[in-house]
Length: 196
Image 1 (tube, helix red, strand yellow):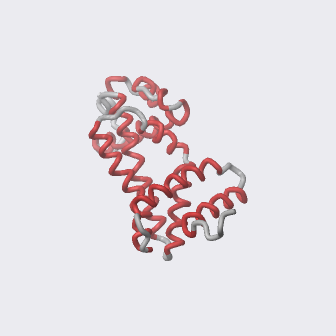
Image 2 (tube, helix red, strand yellow):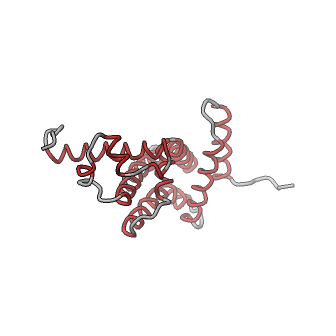
Image 3 (spheres, rainbow, N blue to C red):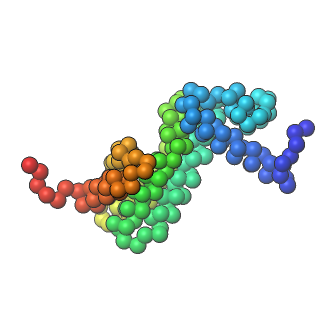
């Protein structure tokens, strides 16, 4: 019988599952989505394949678990960031900065890469609902401000944040702050001056 490394069997299983999910994200971050296999995960954590099957019966189940695991954590970060601000512009800035931090984290790219793979319909539905939760704090701020089409605007802002994240560079503080300021100005104020 395998050695239990916690006070209870349930705690041991929860710790092992956490380690498996974290290791799966690391594998994808290092080698891309195709590098994630049950065999690679078993090698990474030092488990036999039969022991791994106690947690995941297939690669698809593993992928769904990794994606589903990350989204609630990110949603909590976004909700907390918005809750700490007191004005609409400050709430939007807090949301944008928190989302950029999440995107800059290496595990975000891994989760995005994995979510593009074939998943069971039940997993896709769960992931879609969690993705909506990621946008919910921004939708709420837009509603509070009386903005038309808050859900659509939140999706558009999400696309702008992803684009802005590609302009950020490690160690370029002033440049990065300019990108963030431009993004925030665009989201909050749009274009105020005539073009041309």
